[in-house]
Image (cartoon, rainbow, N blue to C red; front, top):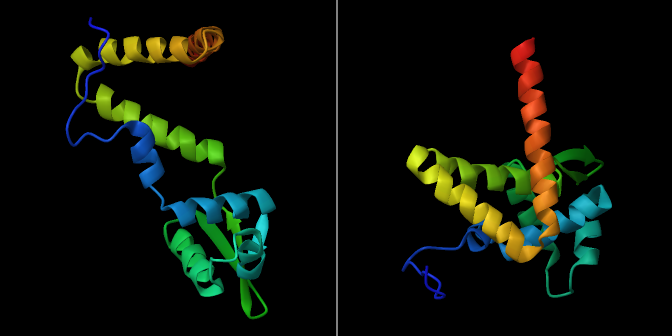
Amino acid sequence: MSGRSLRFWGFRPPREVADGALGTLERRVLDVTTAMGEASVRDVAAHLDPSAAYTTVMTTLDRLYRKGMLDRVKHGRAFVYRAVHTTSDIQRTMATALVDGVLGRGDAHAVPLLSSLVDAVTEHDARYLDTLEQLVRDKREALAKKDGD
């Protein structure tokens, strides 16, 4: 394989796809809400830069609520919002969808995906190979227990 990376026109890298699932302000508002545990519009607005208008934050919180990312409870005249999912749950769901999308195309696509995963893990930090190996061992044990039941 050559040292040049392959580029596809019109193909968005997974990181860009994941980042595009929510708008920039939506991600910031979700991060603030998650960090605070529970937050009102005023609480979230206070933690954002002053250029984010109160009504914009309110609309963004409502949009995240309608997308199922936040839950809300009425306290007096205002809503208090709480994240429905943890950040790791969201990341896991996006990763699973990406992998399922490739693996769902048939066995011929599995080996290149798995090989690329190992290469990417190694390039990022070779210590992650140990983590990956442990995850595979744990999954094999869980499957063996399930089959034994």
